[in-house]
Length: 260
Ligand code: PLP
Image (cartoon, rainbow, N blue to C red; front, top):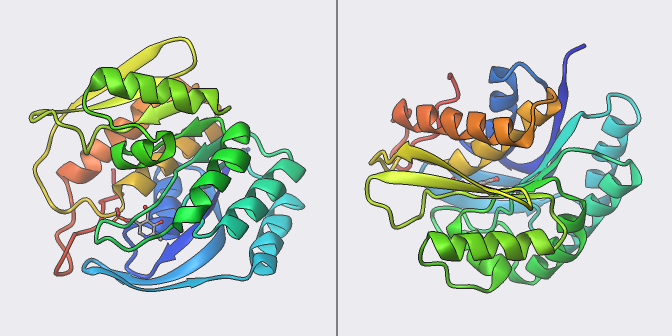
């Protein structure tokens, strides 16, 4: 039986991030991909030109359709945009008893467009984190969620502990925005141990959609029954390779290359 993964996220018309990145990643990892779209963005490599959230009912119904027939082995949440959408998605996931929930706390696009309203951050903490298996913030997102200023690896470890205390089983703080000049350290905390996954830093502006791709890869691996440690190692490797072979298309930040 093929493993099945669901992404509950926003659509990126430019094809580099969001639902499109998730489904391409699921396909590459040999997992059957399904989607519930929360918002449609008009977007390209230059930025986000428009955001159109779907109705709560429309989002709930997509999740109902999937849960009552196909049922996912793992689920990823991406752009949730508002407090209402966040709550509706969390309630549905609870209702259907979804397992292997990967929360990518998407907040702001690289160009600065808000993909999560500020007042929704508390809702993410209150309703999503307690049911999540993994949360995958980058450093700025980890700072917003914890209210901490994160300067070094020790701060990252403290932030991971704080996020873990909010109820999420494992925390991955991605290192792409970190201070290390030559390497990137993705830090995994599983409630007991800290695991550091290092990669050489690659200099490029073409990293659009890497966060979505990372979380989607973790989701695909969890859907296949891999351990959280293995899933995160695979995702770090997958994203490193995707950036190394980045696609320089469009006039701005080129999209992640999913042909790993
Ligand atoms: N657009 C959507 C719909 C997304 O879900 C995301 C994910 O983070 C982004 C844009 C962000 O893309 P970028 O990697 O350019 O920050």
